[in-house]
Every structure is written in structure tokens, then in C-alpha cells.
Length: 119
Image 1: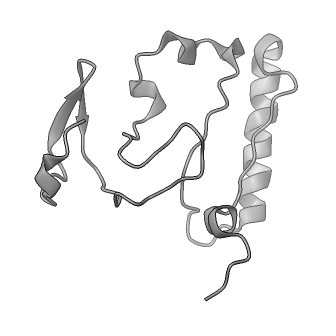
Image 2: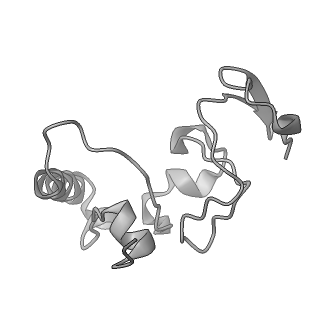
């Protein structure tokens, strides 16, 4: 994995990974830890649709994907959870063989990563 010589001007530049071109849209510190076992500092985070793994196209693969996002301003965590549950229910109706019984959840990142630790 290229480190770009610690250069901060890589934003907007393209890199090729496994024959696919990606545009650098953000940077994380080397000490960043997502607390997800398969991730570690230095990993590349790419949109799922860009991955070449054919298992990602198999709805029955049960890969347990994790995502990171920000809530739209004015949207509460509870509103987002209700919306995501509706998406999961719609997928279960559209793909009953693969999505029946599957779910999705939203957890606050800060609470998940640091728990009750206070300054």
C-alpha cells in the first residue's frame, strides 16, 4: 500500500488498487482504530460497489458488512434506526430467500469506540 510519503496533498488524486482506479477523498491518522477485527490502520476504505469480490454480489453470502456514516443534520439516531429498519424490511420482502431474518443496526461511533470513558 503506498504511503504517499506522508504527503497531505493526495486528496483528489487517483490510485490504482487491484486494477481499479480510486480517488482519494479523505485521510485517517496512522493510529485510527475502528474496533472491527478485519480493519487496521493503513487499510483502504472503498465503496462496496467498487470491490471486485464476487461474493459481494451474492445476497446469501452473509458477509456482515460494516459502514461508517454521519447523520444528516436534524436527524436523530432513533429516526435513522427506524429508516434503516424499513430498508431491511423492504429488502426482506424484495429478496425473501436471501434477506429473510437479516437486520441492520446503527450504533453511535463514539460510544462504540470509547464507551463510558470521560476526560
